[in-house]
Amino acid sequence: MGYGAVVLTADGEGKDPGVFPQAAKTDVSATLTPSDKKNLLSFARETISHLFLADTTPLARNFNAALQQLSGGFVTLKKRGELRGCIGRVIGDEPLGKIIGTMAIQAAFNDVRFNPLTADELNDIEIEISVLTPMKPVAGAADIVVGRDGALLGKDNHQAVFLPQVAAEQKWNREELLDNLCRKAGLETGCWKKDAQLSTFQAVVFSESEFR
Image (tube, rainbow, N blue to C red; front, side, top):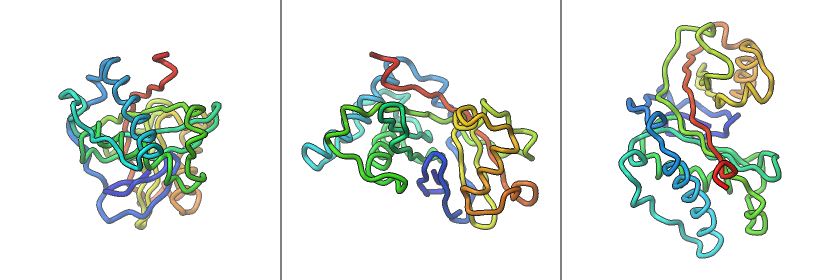
């Protein structure tokens, strides 16, 4: 997953464009209703399906006011429980509905860790969405709460990010989380201990299985 205007994988890495991300000020995640979540999941699936059927994508329109607010978001695809793609944007520079449609395409076809999704796979795919709170710079590693916070690290023109759920899934402590961020950014283990920029965020995470 990337920042500034960079898009990165959920455990991804990327070049820092020179500006640490300035997030949208409104916390959209706090206002999402079950209906909003269902609409975002449906739109993500519809967007991928349209590309297979007609080589076009639906417009992000007819969303309510909450889904038109600026927010960062990630789309994760899982196939029979295994990761099949995950890409998002931490900076809230576009309406949430549009971000989710765009990231659905990126996760399906442009996650470099995987081959592009095929139409035959779509029925086996579970879609998960993470809607992010505004990014908050922190003074140091001690301000990161594992299991609650996602973390963004920037140093020497490199960046990397993990969603909040990644550390919990991997059973990492804070130091392991940060060491893995360094490695994902293409930097040395322990790079976070000196002259690194750290920011945290939280996420509201929901998936299709919750609404079946």
